[in-house]
Image 1 (cartoon, rainbow, N blue to C red):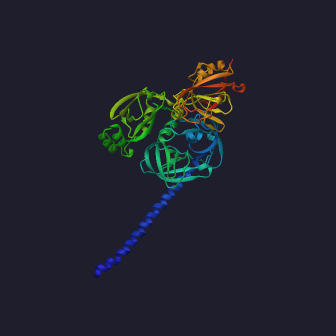
Image 2 (cartoon, rainbow, N blue to C red):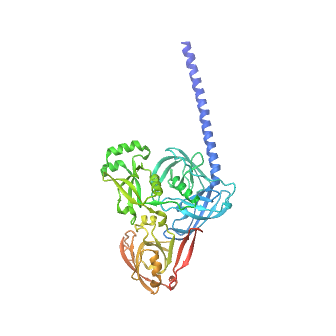
Image 3 (cartoon, helix red, strand yellow):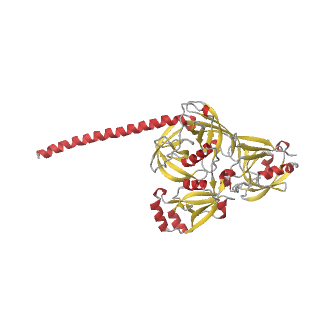
Length: 497
């Protein structure tokens, strides 16, 4: 009995000792974690830059000024990584970067991607502060629930630092489908163009969007492969078949599309991180190779006999690296497993590297992004914006923004002359401008809008005409061409005689 009482008295003492030991242990972990975060922040912030963008001319984007974030990747080559939406795609812009210590330098846009939201700016290496750091991309693929760090310079109001966890490795998000990490953050924050870091201070992705409690980051593999090409003075290999993809539940596929349940059961075991989601076709770009053999609802199961497991980055990498003409796809359609050979095309050949300013309108050939958003076929002669009050502003419209009429038009003909591309327009401009009064034939891709009692477009995807009166000031067209050597845009007047 006495022994039992002594033991009972010792028990609370042991519990107290265990509590104190655990408290000290946990406190050391917290201190170590805090110290690690401080080291990461202090080193990474010296690679962060603020980017001031001013867009003067754009095929279809806004002409304005804004600020974004980027980070130094290579001090020797002067490479700075940011988002396409920070630099403005298909646009003529001016860029200045501000380094962590306040020093500034002008930058050139040497690469932006049409599909994935990343871009590469270049500054003179001598303009980068000696004390600035650089952030390389990780070669090791991150794991689900891995802790990550985000360092940014939100709205140029000072450095921000956030910690979080990878809650999804294979999401598909963005203005164009791209493989995306979903990051659960400890607080609201982050800035587009910020690096997402592992504990080795290596970038695993580039932040491009998000919400109040999460952020979205582009897979770093996209950027790393482009940088490798640029460092070897090569054009980055970017290929596609022309599909707009999304993640789709196999449970829905079983219910609605006769997908074999036994295949779903095997898939869940083989690819647990995919969470029973597969890559499915949401839409097909008009005029693309995929339009010939694929359709919405097709499940992309494998490429060149390699199962994808919901990993769009793997699919994109296989397309980019493939040396042949057509890739082999294994798809499921209405529950049946099929094989399709689909031709690849060079995405960079569709980039807008030439525009024509004529009559207040900017003419261009539709790239992948514009084709997806408008429905206009790839490479078709297009108009997206016209200066209000200019000759071509007589084309009916229902939407005006920043003193510009906003359109989604495919141009077929002017003055009874058939037009399919910019070369046709240049060829026939001397004949077109001989007359003051011309007629333009086009197809409207704006959505239906009813505004009765006013001269507005109220139809969609219809072939239409507009009478245009050419003013003397508008009959001096010029070409804008991107110079791949200087990374500037050159202007050249079009000879009309």
